[in-house]
Length: 251
Image (cartoon, rainbow, N blue to C red; front, top):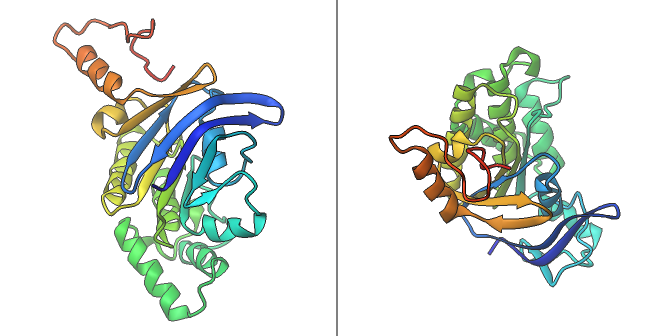
């Protein structure tokens, strides 16, 4: 198991954001986190990539390391086993695509220039951006920049990719293409954990669904799939989603 949270309480400073979190991730799983802005999705993700400390838990294990009392010296090595993708791409604007990716590999311990360039060429092929290697970030569309961000995330063959609203700045067609790419990556064994407000993607690319609401995290995969079927029936009438709400299941 890559991630195993048991009764974890997550805080932002002294504010309890999520209580009693039970969250589990296996190799190759494709997991959605949904919920309102401020419901705790990003806070949960930040604990997984060590941006936010876990202070209270029965157990909180990420990549075989218990987070309670984890020494900071272990974090860089653990982060090298992860890929992280953000809504705003976070590419370095002062260098081209190739140099953006070289920077990451050098920072994570790669030494030989020929091996670095061979790995970069491989991932650019994988994300269908091989012809953009010499482009500057500002010369790329939003979708192209996000593909480069995905290339960056998979450089070190991560066990898990954490994607925080990766389609938030993209049009629907481009967003669909990005999630199709992430789904393809998950089929190689890399787990994907993605927060999103883009509900149509969950229908188009089914996965495991967790919802943050009222300081709780709940797996709703089975309920969600049934609700999608109900909403899509031939009456075309809005349905109550079983939580006292209408069709927006993210709330």
